[in-house]
Amino acid sequence: MRNLLRFLAKYHAVFLFVFLEVLSITMIVKYNNYQRVKFLNSSNQLTGSIYDGYWGIAQYFSLKQLNDELAEENAKLRSELMREELSKIGNDAPQQDSLYQQNFFFLTAKVINNSVNRVHNYILLNKGSRHGIKPDMGVVSSNGVVGVVTNVSKNYCTVISLLNNRLKISAKIKRNNYFGSLTWNGDDYRKAELDEIPFHVDVAKGDTIVTSGYSAIFPEGLMLGTVSDYSLQGGSNFYKITVDLSVDFKNLVYVDVIQNKTRDEILKLESTDENDQ
Image (cartoon, rainbow, N blue to C red; front, side, top):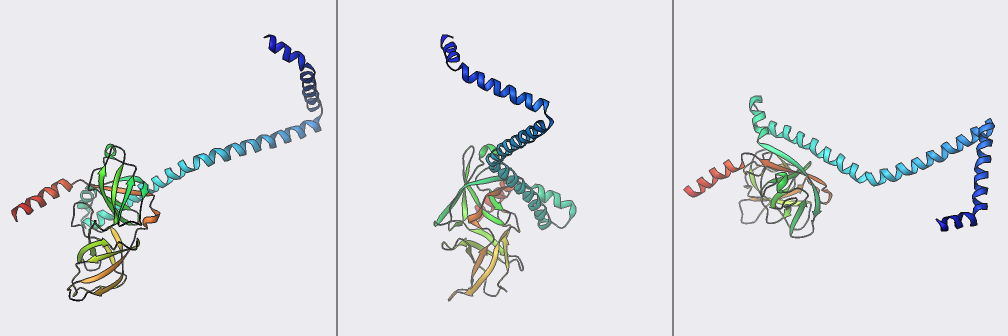
């Protein structure tokens, strides 16, 4: 308290000057119309500038969150669209469409790590077992197939990318339904190879390559890419087909994880058939 009194005593002249200045300005503004209008205009401009600056800073820091929310919402809308497309592919009868559609559940996830320049590339997603993710679930983007879930923790999962030569996708030529195996060539992240297509099959550049549906992981008709080149391999009865991948793996942000609700039933039957052979 004594220090405060000493401080006030030492600077009393300054405080008195400031008080008188504020008092005089207040009286001038209060009793003179011209000065009052000028003061209000100036104060409004200053206040507006301060608020503009504040909201600019606030919007800058909230921009990432807003972008994430918009991107996730777009991903959910794409999932709904994909469901509709799958129902059209699966069955022609309207009463069966909804049953086919209900077999597949889509969960949106964000890519938090990704690689394209290795022989065995993997992707890390921000969803895990507590979100319902399990190994061997298919992963797609709005442009097509991305990969397959391999390992799952509580909050994250790893995906073996289509850019991994250990992954083979059952694929077919959409135009004629001849199927084979799609594998990354290990070189260009934009291209893959479609094998096991017999040489008597009609193949053309620009042919659309989609999932065959011959697995419990991916439904039929998901986009994989288009034929960019093909040739007959010497001493072989099969084409060597180069496919331009539909997914840009350097530009992945949000993906959808596919849960096939009939997967366990399919695998059980396939396992029984293998044991009988």
